[in-house]
Length: 60
Image (tube, rainbow, N blue to C red; front, side, top):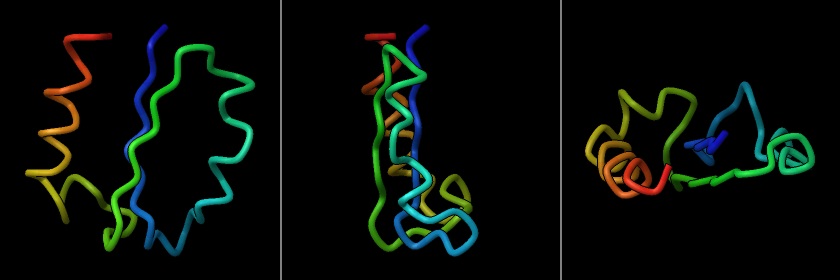
């Protein structure tokens, strides 16, 4: 199953290291990191998240 993770690089609750090794468990994984965005990516950067989704969904 294609899987997309959109991650805020400034997330204080879940650090970037949380992503380490995810690809071992998800065969078809895409990770998009957003610099300057924290835990609530869809509220803090809705235009960026929407653009990522629009680009990724046709390939999913």
